Image (cartoon, rainbow over all chains, first blue to last red; front, side):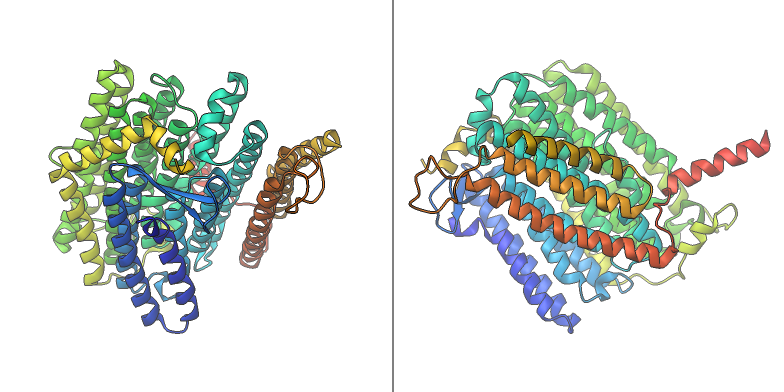
Length: 499
Length: 122
């Protein structure tokens, strides 16, 4: 069974190498990508079924424990692997079905698979320095994907994205160096024991430094400003996978390091404050926008706040809520961005001023938008309702009334900004070209019919989000088990040390 | 020796921070390279005092800690690759616009436009 652990990293990497070798034959690359990602989803699901009750670890290369590179899979990592690889597969289908995207470039498929490998590696690594390496694999791939095409606006926003990510990476290396100087190890299981022994004056700055590093990647307040500017310029499938996965890798790293290395006994006021500020600023930003992708990008930030809220409570119920929320959010957010892509594809633009009456011309897209949008706002009976209910209950249990109130108010504002898209794009009559700027005009393409693969993969994601709502009890149980593994790290430490 | 290295790290971080706050892309790239070098030196410093080459069989007291060296090497390779990508991106930006300055983002431009319109109305 230990063979299974490296598979979610190895499969996409091997696939990427083969795909690069086949760079002259796009059809072969497509088949290769689909086969590799299907196998990765299967391997991740099998892995999750094995590690859902107790974690497993493998030391790569057969070195003794603590010398070799440790890969650790616990329930939390397993859940993230299954959801992320499923999203990668769904978006790949969408990208192949979308004739106008970067899929035509011979470098799209290899780089995309490298991105998948990097994301899996971030979830599996049991070593702080390898977390850095996994981040760099993911980010390098994302730099290429976000600038694929080399248009002027992509280069401008790509530059912001690359520089801010690089700065976070430099801070990350600095944090690793300081932690190594203080403790003499970068193995997370060993660190969890040794950091506990450090004096508070050393421990707190290290914890805060890591929070800043991952906070940039996760786009929490006040480190979010790069996200809404850089994501919307990429082609829709790429924006969708970034929106679904990349910030959540940051959230995963925050949850993993804060629970394993810097555990806290009660609710953390700092994290709860950051959670509240992230939610409010994100949703207010979304309300001010008038382009579908930009509204959705600001919503990513707002939603990250809910995950940090679950972590900030530092209880099993809070963490379980956060994990459930991440699962729901990845699926719903990816689906919404794919719908945004469908709108752009069919109407030629994502600017709300130029869109109108889509519910009459393409009712399918209307339905596909409405379900995840209501789910994102947290209306029953959709998955977002269950996720928010779990977080609200966990918050009320601990008497954190203020943050619960903030989160409910933000839900209402989320609903408001979703109705803004609905009213602007789907309802109404003939589109009017009045009052648009030259920038928006430049983005308009002629209308085109919807390819079946794009609609199919979007519909599949919407269906998955409904399944999450229907199967909420077993998924919440699994999240709860994962949260229990996070709050008591003994099993994690033991399995890494090979005891 | 360690003090000299520590001062080097400080100077590199300070110069790098100054450079990435500039408007010109080439300076930002140089600033990031400096910060990267500073971080790599910091990694080496984290390994403690200098010693002999860590070869199997040498007495463990006399050798230098090999792990930070391995980490620094990995970090150097990554920084090198990404700096190359950044330079390519900066070149692409220059080809497209014949300008080395970082542009304002969409939101900033929109707000600047609002400000101008407000002035005109008043």
